[in-house]
Amino acid sequence: MELSDTMECMKYSGILAIIVAWLFVAGPTFTINGKKNTISEATKKYSSKIIISIGLVVGSFLQFLFLLYLNAKFGLNSYSVGSLLYILTNIATVLVAVFTIQKNPRMHTFLVRFYFIVHPISLFILGVSIRIILVQTISSLLIVSYAIGAMFVWQRYKKQNAYMEEWAFLILSLWVLFMTFVPV
Image 1: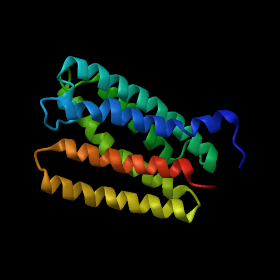
Image 2: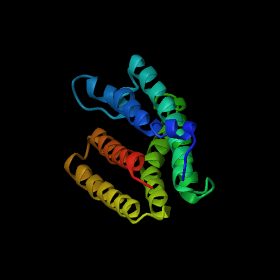
Image 3: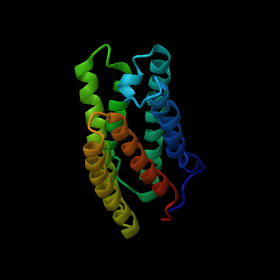
Image 4: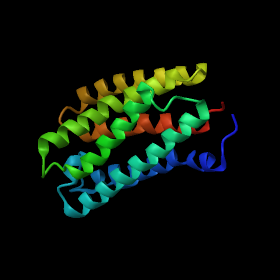
């Protein structure tokens, strides 16, 4: 399938979203007090809150553009369950920037958990809905890796949720890189 020039440019929006997530969302969690912090803990510092909130919003927008690219590249239905879940997790990410842990801790916690549970599922559903065996296999392996890794990280670092967030970012980053460059 031949993609328009606009769609070809959108191909790299997923990679830009990864860069934004690692630099502006995960990055500040490393710098507070020399210890690992969750994203929510890092937003307690005002300068980090602004950087992280901007990163969440910009990253979500770039991920939405990447979804449009994937739908065009693989001929997916924009109204599929995988696409809708993907969009919902991006909306949840923007709402995490709005409902900070300080303003509304319950809503913030719900949105963060929703993202880290539902986003990998949306990637899995998107991946297996593509009729390419390699994409289906990689998507399946990544969701299994995500689950096994999450259990291992949770068991090893029970009180350090930042490691869980980093594990999720890593697996999700790998999926986006793979989907960007996989041939049709």
